[in-house]
Length: 121
Image (cartoon, rainbow, N blue to C red; front, side, top):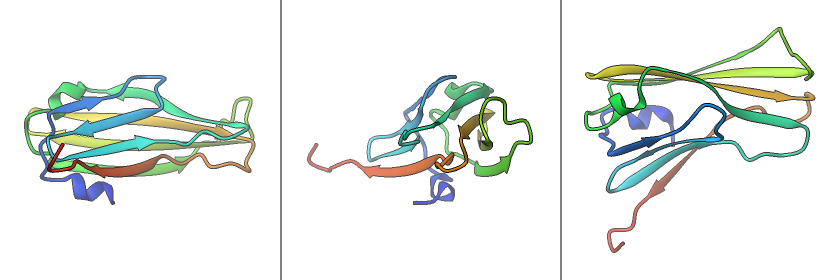
């Protein structure tokens, strides 16, 4: 599943928080979950949310985009990766910034999982 597949979909719930490890978009038929499977010697979490996640509820997504870049300021780690997710509906725009840090041998990426809901559930 690609982030662009979210465009045009209307969500009834969007959950995520600064310092959290997942961002979840849900409606009656499907869930899109942004997450990272933690491993040794690395950390990936939501670093900042600009805008109101509530603006992404109840109207179709007009924008769903991903921008990835490396940071030159590594702090205590050998490698840092920023991942920005940009979302918008007619109600507002939300930018979710993730920070991945590691010793350089582990993934700093955010994964997207698509979970269809059963028609019998």
